[in-house]
Image (cartoon, rainbow, N blue to C red; front, side, top):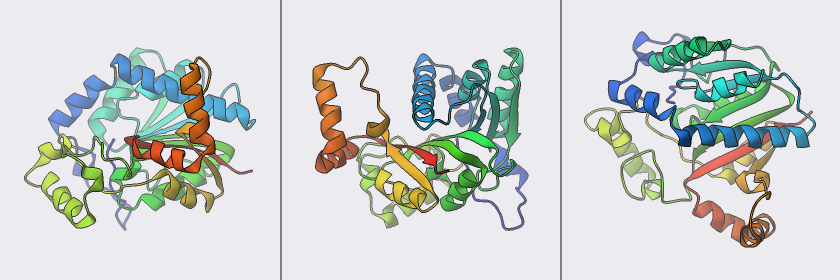
Amino acid sequence: MSHMPERKDNAMPDDSFSSHEEFFKYYAEQSTTPQTVRRFAAIQDMVLRVARKHSAIRSVMEILDIGCGAGTQSMMWAREGHRVHSLDINRPLVDLGRKRALDAGLDIDFRLGTATDLPWDKESMDVCLVPELLEHVSEWELCLNEFTRVLKPGGVLFLTTTNTLCPVQQEFNLPLYSWYPSFLKRHYERLAVTTRPELVSYATYPAVNWFTFFGLRKVLVARGFDSYDRFDVASAAGRGYAATFALAAIRYVPLVRLLAHVVTPNTLLVAVKRK
């Protein structure tokens, strides 16, 4: 999903919600692939394990899916009986998600809007899901403020975003882009929204922010969260001896953890809002 910063007058121009046809077709098709379904199922399992560990689990929870796209992840939670609220800035994808949910007999609260100004009340959500969004919003700290506002104490925030430590990335069709200096990234960002949209697969709002887990953890701690990376929340169940040993080494040896982040293309973070 692609977001844009909120304008000062809180109004959004109509074309802000539009989508390039190639971008829409790509995400409409990708949203139902077995790989996508497996990824969202793994996210759901991870979030529920963290919620149980912190005694934040409820039989029916309020789930907020920010950057919901065509609604695949939202529908997965709704099928489990949870109350799901979904938001995206891409009107065609929101319309597609709403139609798919209706066809499946699922009641999901789809909204069109921006992550810098969420249309839900303070402390109204048990889980906030934010996959691959933060990198697209120039005022990304406003997004974190909103996620903090809508989550209940004990609520779980899940997000994935860019990883500047790793040279492999999927945002720009350029080699080693994560490691480009800022001035060169700004150059390609301008090209992506003018004469070279194919550089970002025709995304309306290309990635403009590059994060590390360690940097995001610091800003979330300041907002009252306890934060964990993918290695902290990974399940050891079903792993062989070598994989179990590697996971233990990553968890307990700081240098090994850093190296593990260097070879991981994206940042994954799960945070629990302190009570």
